[in-house]
Length: 231
Image (cartoon, rainbow, N blue to C red; front, side, top):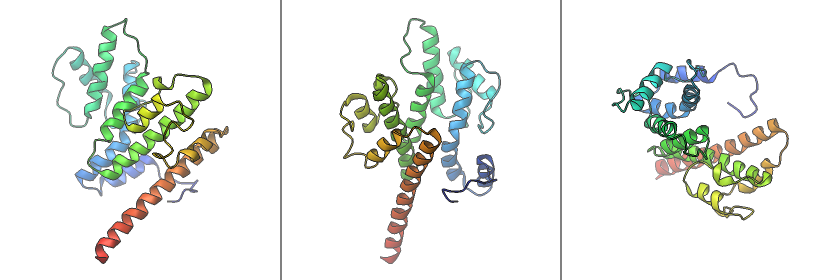
């Protein structure tokens, strides 16, 4: 796999199917974390009263979501289902509370609420690399959001997702670098990317930034292993 591959006939679904026949159950659970973003789309479709799963790459069926939601709505114990992550239940609880309180102001979109719960769930994982990857994506998305909000005069505190140190700094700091120059080494590059007007070019530059991060992680991991063997 290279960054410049443009004619791949290997889909995300194909990749997951192949992994299912190779990985241990423990490793499958790690892979499932990445694919939950597709199930998230189906959760959002569900609360919009869609009666189907619009995202076929998700593995949690409409009926499973429906059973969970209705149980919570009726204040009953949800049916046991190991396929459904804990943050789905929390999301539905928040949604039901909002429905029951019509006067309650909804400052954050449901999409952002679900994203925040998703990142928090993934970043509690015991695998350090997985946690670092999710935090990288959270930080990149939040920083680009903060830059866009500042450009258009929007209250960035209403759009920042998550509760890590970077998210808190973005919500509260009015400095040009949000007080993160020492904390986030790729911030200057990200600020330049944010100025790119061609959306396709911009996405490619974000991919390149992530690719470089992955290469660095792989290098240090390989270095550490080789040092152990040498020792």
